[in-house]
Length: 304
Ligand SMILES: [Zn+2]
Image (cartoon, rainbow, N blue to C red; front, side, top):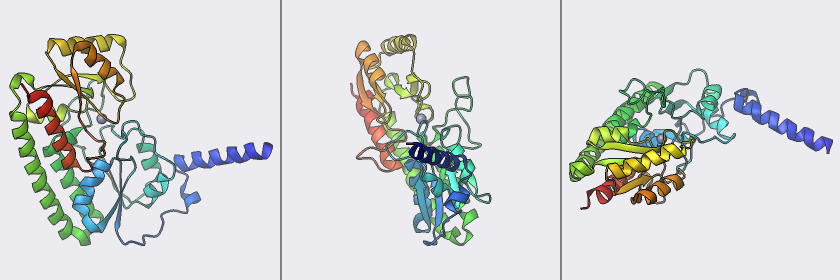
């Protein structure tokens, strides 16, 4: 009995050490780079998609958050420590999105390895008491995603100058695709009558999309994932759905939709799905995710 609990305590202590960043000695530092590729660590699979599009065959990308999970609240598993220790480059969104991951990253990243925040210095929405740092979902505007891609390109050139021509060519091709995507969504949104371009989403993940395409965020269920709304806030949201004559509200597959479904039912609105970061069974890339959303919005808001 005693031996076992000591062992358990030892295991927990080792785990705590690993997570607190004193792990280097346990893991023996960075593993030898056998692939010869630039090892990039990021938070969400969605961002890994940006990085793979720019890096192509020269990079090996690891996302700390699985494709179906929510990066705001995701708790990384301890074995991810080694991925961070091995990384030649770390790329995150920033603006507080990776609150639960930054400790793991900062404590384990090697000293000479750049940690790039894709949203740094870009124009932010928010910055009020609910979101002191600003709203982090800039990638929902493809034009801002293009700024992310330029940053990824520049960071890869910095850590792997021999690949510069490849990174520039890949980024150029992907930027063209993103620009086309932006035009495609703009014309889809323009087909929705002006007075119906009103959004109710689960958390506040659409302000940049709304700003870019002339929609209005009418309401959100929770100010931030992980925070439950009060009965009074829910009643206010239902009033808003009625007052704005909203017929469709949008849930997110990675977050519990129970409250939104209740509010929608009470206010007589339908529930559809919008994606913002997590993948689904049929959506495995940023471009597919944005097309899915445009289609849902046209279907939900555009039909007479
Ligand atoms: Zn979010």
